[in-house]
Length: 203
Image (tube, rainbow, N blue to C red; front, side):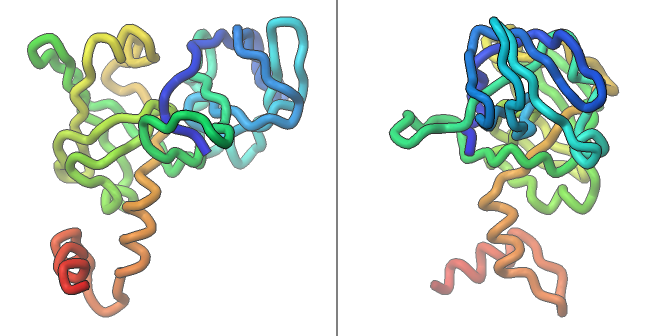
């Protein structure tokens, strides 16, 4: 389990035959789980100042592999007793999103991100989402699109500073939104968040 708070911007040294080698200050052990751009991966080799994780073919099909170069976000898995911030992130990427708009909003920046229709049901106003492993709050939900307002500190310390319109990003929707939706979904009628709120209000 992760929190969506990036430990470090690490440097990709190589990606070959599914093995991703990263230079970082953080020193994991072989067998450790670490989120790289939001994807939970297993450390298979450790050397001086570097570590290597393995990407299965299935992972490579799901992830935005074009972002596994230059710098990447890394976050080690939580340990018992760690301070919990951000939100619960599993490191299981649901789908890819596409940045469709980037606009200044005062000192902050608005990012509009589109995603596949099947996953938009888990996007909730003021809910949480992980973008390439970064825990963020959804400001507005539109048709198969959502808006994030990113403060300058986050932009300067994450990959958001290099994102452009058309950039693909790894998305992990909120675990609780997925659970609640599947708990209350019905085969007989279309479930909406308004109906979920009505059902929950009766208990």
